[in-house]
Length: 204
Image (tube, rainbow, N blue to C red; front, side, top):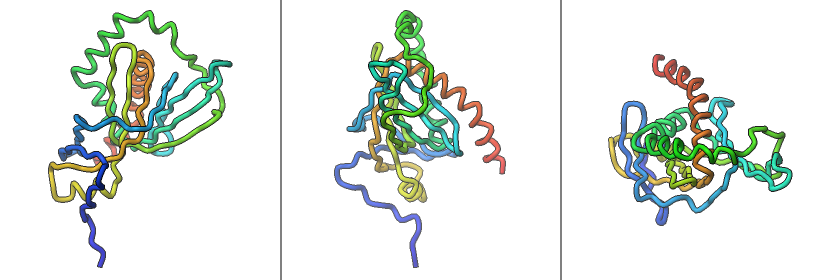
């Protein structure tokens, strides 16, 4: 007979993080977890609700013509981790530090990437993530994406309210702090569409 909720062993060399179980999901503490080895530099970032999830789209534009997308990365996120990502960006002290920096450096917006979204890209790839960490230093910002498999998540939290859980480094996306700020604004717009769906789900 198959046994369910069996805790999968940690794989040697893979990072792990502390988790805390909460009524609306789990909180994963990424302090001390190294950034993903895979990196992507994005000139433009956007978010879109599509096909029952959220697509975070990161574009690297060609040098010429500037409107052409050289590389496009889509990070697929389910609704709940997407909302958790946005909540972490709204938390203090990150939000105040970001707002203070933006207020003192508004002139850097003049170099923003064009908002026009052309059809297609020279190269496209899609990844999945459900844990994020956002940080910025001066005009440079980074969004680190990690993934925990649903099976491992279910097993680890079946009979424990806290502990350690294995995760996989997916990709670290780097861009300007101004662009990450615009990206978060786009995420807030998407969150307004997602929030009623999650509220309706909780009520059933």
